[in-house]
Length: 172
Image (tube, rainbow, N blue to C red; front, top):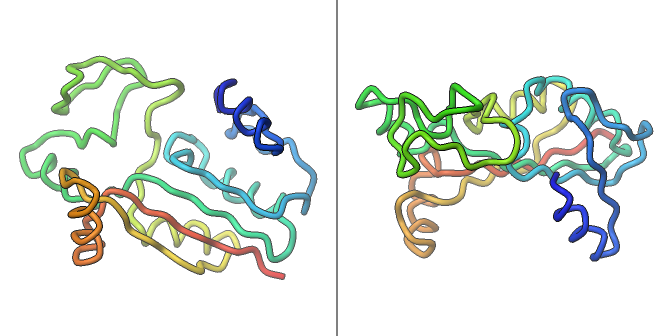
């Protein structure tokens, strides 16, 4: 989380922390009601630790919501079909290589590249493996379509949608 995000969270009356997710969460066991991770898990090297830590810090019955790009999204399949690295499956923190990008080989992100890219089944399976029950998986977005058409396409062909959103719950 960057400082601007922390300020925005605090302005809403919420608490935010800055931490290295590959070292665990600096929170007490069972102290959190909900965790929201929007496009975070794919940047973490130790996804097992992150999911275990989410389970540890959540109160019984607490839930986590995670959103991440979908490996089986149609554009990623198209990249592979022409022998290119999908743009979301980066191989370097410094340069975009082996892919086609309007950015050329420039990297314009804050923080590390994507470390792991998930399918919906793999993401649900990871959380389930560490004791969560999966309550809902939503597939959304469909590149390169605009929002109205993307919504229709993602309902008709969810496997190929751009994003995965999963809601999981810790047992009571």
